[in-house]
Image 1 (tube, rainbow, N blue to C red):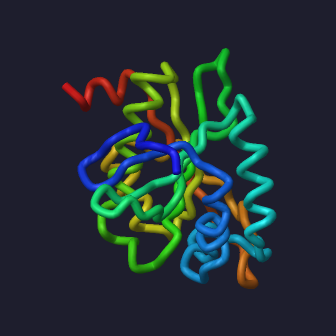
Image 2 (cartoon, rainbow, N blue to C red):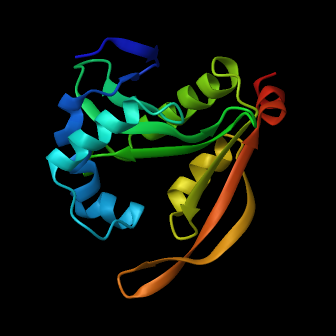
Length: 181
């Protein structure tokens, strides 16, 4: 197992490893996560193992596994995706694998750690994300972190027999620095 890379109050982030494939498959296949992430196709662990191999060698992705401080248990993943190095921007992504680990503040802590890492270590200027307008808890958490709704992607995803709108949310380095003062 990889050692902690970024330490938080209740969680730490470590580099993702191929051994996380079963966790990633749980995150993408559990009904609650599938519904929140709008995943329509099953994802076997072997496919996740290959995806991890590819992503850890992709210079436009930084992939972490979220682990609990008290036990070291891996509970989810978060990532900076589609990093545009010249433009200094990336897309943020997070998934907590198991229902019993959600609503405990771990996702919010991971978001805080990743935001700080993106602006103060990686030197990005902009973070953005897409979130379903129906995912009220996530929208609230992103707003608490300082993200603002910049627009709506109308009927952006077809899932469970209907089309769903998504918000585009963004946070700029100077906005983040203001709220840190």
